[in-house]
Amino acid sequence: MVVSPSGGTANNASSHNKLEYDTVDLQLNRSYFVSKKLALTPSLGTRGAFIEKKFHNVYSGQAFIAPLGKLTQNEFSYQWAIGPCAGLNASFCFDSS
Image (cartoon, rainbow, N blue to C red; front, side, top):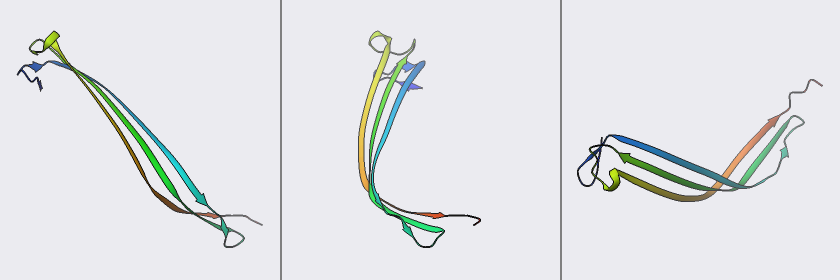
């Protein structure tokens, strides 16, 4: 149950949400061949993220006391982040020869 600032309650509610999540990677790596069948690849870099959230809510109903009988709520959030990224990839070749 949703209560309006004026004290009425909403019988109906609808919501629309949108989320966008984008990342950007910048990595440097180099392969080291330890043996004929084993290769190690260390990597070091940075990762950035961009996050955008949008919310659109509508509340309405017979007992809801608001101008035009409905209350609309819009929210927007934009965030970003950046940080280090490191890893080690190992490749092993299973060759019969």
